[in-house]
Structures are given as C-alpha cells and as structure tokens.
Amino acid sequence: MRVEANELSAAEASRLIHSGELKSVELVTACLDHIESVEDKVGAWRQLDRDYALEQARTADEFRQSGAGIGPLHGIPVGIKDIIDTRGWPTECGSPILAGRQPKADAHLVTLLREAGAVILGKTVTTEFAVYSPGKTANPHDLERTPGGSSSGSAAAVAAYMVPLALGSQTNGSMIRPASYCGVYGFKPTKASISRNGVLLLSRFLDTVGAYARSIEDIALICECLFCYDERDPDMALRPRPHLSAVAMSLPPVTPRFAFVKSPVWDQADSDVQQGFAELKQHLGADCDEVDLPEVFNGCIEWHRVIMHADLAKNLGRHYKNAKERLSDRLREMIEDGQRCFATEYNQAIDAVDVLNAGMDQIFDRYDAIITPAASGEAPVGLDTTGDPVFCTLWTLIGLPAISLPLLEGASGLPIGVQMVGPRYDDARLLRNARYLAQRVTNDQ
View 1 (tube, rainbow, N blue to C red):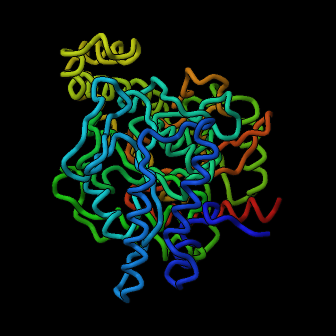
View 2 (view 1 turned 30 degrees about the vertical axis):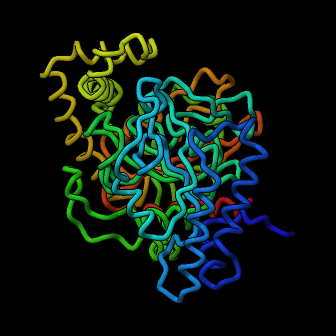
C-alpha cells in the first residue's frame, strides 16, 4: 500500500532525502496540502506560512544537490509550540496580551534545528501562557474531545499526520498528557537537557522542553540534535551529548525489569486505565513488579503547586499588573495563589525534591524503568478543558525523563498512554527500554 509523503516518519523521510529518492519540497508540499484539508477541523496551527516553508524546502534541496554535507534533519518539517521564539514569526504564547509579538532572534533550540537542516513549518497552538485555558485545537481522534494541553497543537499536528515532528514543553503535564490523549509518542527529557533560552519562562525549576513524534526512532533523531549545552540556560549541566539514536535503536543487553508504580493518585485513574495496567503487568509477568512509593511522596502534588504558582506569580507578574483583565479567571487565581505563598513554603517544597529523588534512586537500583499512567483516562469530552495533569506532576517535580507510549485503548476506543520514567540523565536508556516495551506489547498482540 502506497504511503503518502506526509505519513512517513521523520527517520524514513530523512533516509529518502539523503539517498535522493525524496525531495524536501515534495515532503513539505504533502504536509501543507494535508494541513489544508484538515486544519479547519483540527485547528493545530497558530502561524503557518506556505511560501516561507516551501522556500526553506527548496533551499534544502539545492544545498543537497550541491554535494555539501547535510544534517540529520535535512529537509524535515518541524512544528514549533507558540511559546518558543522564532525569528521573523510571531510568538504570542496563546494570549491576546502578546498579540503581534515578534522576536528578533531564534530560541537556541530553533537555531539547532536550522543547523540540523530542519524546515520550520509553523507555530502550533498552545494554551494561554502554556497553562490551562484551551486554544482552538481539537483531538484528531474525536473532534469533540480535548487534545490536552498546553502543547495541544503540537500533539494534534503529529497525530493528524500534518507534520512528523513537533516541539512542546511541560511545567506540569503539558507534554505527556497530550501525547496520551492524541495517541503519539511524547518525550519529556531530564530537566534542562534542552536549552530553554528563548522559551517562555513559567518556572525555572519545572519547565522542560520536549518532542512529539510517531516513533521512538524519530524522538531520538530530533532530541539528539537538541541535547546541546547552552550556558544561557543556568540549569543546564555541561555533560557529553548522549548518543540517543544509537542507544534507542539497540537491543537491551538483558531483559529490562520494570517497576509498576501506581503513584499517590491511583484512585483518580479511570477503570479502563486501572484494568489496562493490570493486564500490562500480567503480560510482563516476572519482568514487572508493583512497587509502592513511601508515604513522603504523598506531598508531591502540594509541593508542585507551591512551586508552580509562586513561579507564575513571579514570571507572569507584569502581565497580571498591567493587563489583569485580559487573563483568564483560572490563571489569575493561580497567580494570586502564588502571591500568597510564603518563602518558607517555597523553600520546603524545593528541598523536598532531593528527598524524593533519593527515594527514586533506590528504585532505579533495582529496576530499569518505571511504568505508570500518562493520564487518568481517555481524552475528556469538551474543548473547554485540557484534562487533568495529575499523573505527570510527580515526575515533572523531580525532573526525571518520561515518555508516553500509545499502547493502551480505553472503553471508547481512544488511545491511553503508558508513561515510562527513567533515572536522571539516562534518557538514552529510557528510550531503548521504551522501544523494547512497545515492541514486546505490539508483537504479542
């Protein structure tokens, strides 16, 4: 059966472009034509410039034909969440307050994408200031349901075969939850593995940039280009760049052992999620143990709230001061809650993270990865909600790498993600274990 160019994975398209069997113009045109046919229903894009996208693609083809060396993403279109600065294009962060804002420079990660040869296809829809108030995007699997948030446009664009790769971010559950709802792979790396310079600042302690794709190979392909030290992000560690693609596509040297962690919010999981994970654990047999977290982890939701709300009050304070009436009610309430936080509360929440990570280190001494729900259930009905991020909160708080795998199906036949979590800075092994689990489940079905 013939596969349309827009349905190719990024890795497949890259191999065809490198061999000369596919031109970037053909790939980008196929993506743009498909967007034109479905965008009115899905609404994944905030900014799209067909002429500029095709100009980039033609330049990429001419560069390849010149015989010069080309990058791993050469000619591959990528969607960029509209909180990430792009030179010459508006970056409005889903808020009327920033309407018409046009950055003078690319975010560091956009520069890296251009260096790798990527075509910046457009800016994808985000919620208001990447928090909760939804944009226009609908779930491609059911247009009456939410795609999640805040990286709604990026997840939906990949799920709807508009683009093979897209970038998002997570401060609570904004990468993992949309991936679960939209049935794609969504990867939140170890905190500050990808530079946040030129990305909307909500919480320096929590913000993490991630990627969406339709395969783990594609996740590794794009993230390997982005794991690059940038001294302008004060939390980045100067570490060797991991070989994400090579490790992710290799076989584990031994059969991985998984810890099934219900987390402190298991009672909020829908019955089909609970049943799905019971079946997954049974399927994995002796390779998966249920592991209970110590009681100290029960405080994670409150600690995350304190940090996130206090940081919102600080970093969005100027908008609250100057244009309070143009903020949504919920965002105003979160900022006001953050304004009431005491310094002692904030510092206690920060200090708790070291305790929680020490507990995680003990689990990873015995297990290769954790499996846990990515969301409480299928995407909720209604475009006035983005769903509940509660199953992502703990892992964002402690900065561990996580990926949502589209392996389960809910009662309505819609996707449910399996979230896999790994040790800090061991992102490559997490991707390898995720690929192993996905293949094991798929092959045994």
